[in-house]
Image 1 (cartoon, rainbow, N blue to C red):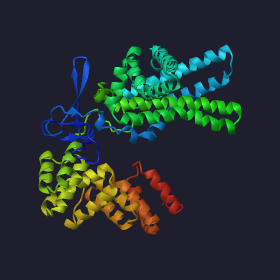
Image 2 (image 1 turned 30 degrees about the vertical axis):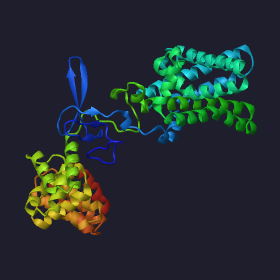
Image 3 (image 1 turned 180 degrees about the vertical axis):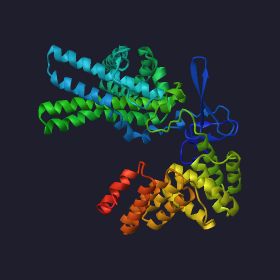
Image 4 (image 1 turned 60 degrees about the horizontal axis):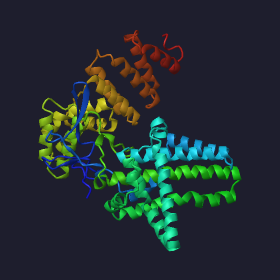
Length: 482
């Protein structure tokens, strides 16, 4: 059974703590980097016990291959794979024919396709679910794998001829069906051991299929479908398309289905790596759809996860105590402040709310959380009509009130800023914003002119003065000069 994250029950865990027994997803595990000499070691710690956690392995992080089928077909739609598919298909079409050159090119293209497919298989088996790049490692290094697969097919063919010679058609048919059934197991062994003898050893390839279990039959079924797909598709293509276009698409399909097939076999190795004795390390696991832990874990997020769990369990007082203990010198993270604020309201802690609101409003203002900031400001005024936040916060609140169409509330906020902080650099801007609101929103151009003239008289050298003068000239031509 898949283990779920303690703090996110809908997410699969990738780490477990043997001390407290909790499991964690990448968002919750505590990640720390530790430098030892010239090396940097990444530590994954239990966020509660602060000791190294145990990786649960890929089987807890990935879906069974039969649940992932649509994504197998999307695997080759990557820059590198697409370049290879188009290049091989184009060259195969260009050199199509029965001459010696055509045959040599065809063999080379087949070899390149198989080599890249093997690279996809081995990368997937190691935990990297992204297609390999087109480099020497994936196209030319250890090209002997391609020759070994060719030799594998030759040995199977020789066995088929021998079976027909000894037992006639019935034995040949039985041999062929058994060989095709176990061919994926042989290819997997060839890829993982790089040994042709090992891939041809019945004890090994039958043992591999047995360890995978009944799922191996499902693997064989899908690999067989993928192997026959190009021929089935080719019949349709050549009936309805010109020969050149049909040949190009047929070649494209052969490369595409080869990559998909080998990726599928690699994924089966990954899924059953413990059963078949294939080692997979966490450092090699790379799934573009899986969550990856950050280089350094956000402590505040971990604290928020613990608090959220306490809330879900109905332990509200304990959740508040946890937050208070972590913020003895005041909250610095708006997420934690918001959770504490919500808990205080839920528990009707009025006195604590009065003390916390100004700090929470300041954090909301800094974070640009407009709607919440305006709501909290309204609650602050309801508690104390003389409440006055910092000038910067008041200026933002006035602007946000104006954005929401609350023109009078915006004017009130700007007026409060001017009266409470007459020497603040934001005062001229507050005057200018108020003038704009009186003209554009409240349809009171006379009041707007009065404010702008006062602004120009009192702050003639301020950076906003030129804008104010231009704005005033549009309200009443010649008024600025007067």
